[in-house]
Image (cartoon, rainbow, N blue to C red):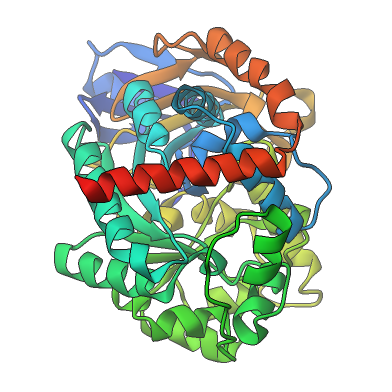
Length: 478
């Protein structure tokens, strides 16, 4: 099959006007002008998307697909308060609710031109959704506990679940890793245990780190809205937790001291509150960075030092983060916001971020961050056919002198015409073709809203914690 459009944007090569690609099975077999390829392959079916841009699918470097149902539930809150309130809502989800939420997120990602996600999940619902829809992804099982006596069981549960996911997945599209929970939710042995396992078993790792000032203060001083005693008193959990001992260092230095950056394939999410020494640690350990500008801005977390990341030549890509914060999986909006924010914060710089730079961060650079750039992230012969078509027919998009600028500055997720993963079309002519009933999923998720809008009571929280304790006791008894 030949895919053709007025513009072809390879990302790693020169743009081609009136370009085309030959897709055979799951790979790109040839690239050139439509006239050239029709002459070489006269019997191939041609799908011509007209005044559009064909380009590699977006690689969303940080997602929480299973949080789609929390969209709009907690708004206009700073990070610590937002995190606390969304976490309490999550306990109201059944396993079926998480499945529906993740499926809605996966459907939206595909319709937004996302072909690969790097998703942190505590339930596994994201892996089910991606498997059914046809998304490519790296899925990290989140592991956390503040109790020293629970560390071994938490680690083993996480490893066992990853192995189950692996057995039930399509290994040509999906791979799996581990993710320690937030620093304020983890005993330090969690970081060490994950590092030891990941190094031995060549397992990728992702972690949230240095995202907010509250987290930085918690690690350095032991004083912030994440204080263990304050959280215990506020929620009424009644858990026998040791007090947090201030580490007197940055979050990056803290997790580094516990060995997590010894993992060969590790990605740090956010890294907003970092200093020069932190940047040296990240560079020396070849840590990849997931840049999530919309979440950082909306939750008042700050702005990541993207120019410093680039100066250090860190592996760096773009992520949309949780729809509970940013509302959409719109990678084009993420590109545009991240680009404009960076330029605004660096007035007079001779090295301002460009549209081509930010497009690379959403595609090939993000693929490099996951060590997948041999297979995805650009349009090249031999790479996987993960391809999207972006409609550029609208009046505000014409005339066009540079298709990359047109995509970054004028388009949005509603301009995605087609999404293909592994040579299989998942979304075509603005319509899902996976066979999943999106309207039915959306209706079930909408039905959750009244329940989620009401904050759980202390009694509900205590009941939930008691249920977890009972489940843990049963597991230990077995």
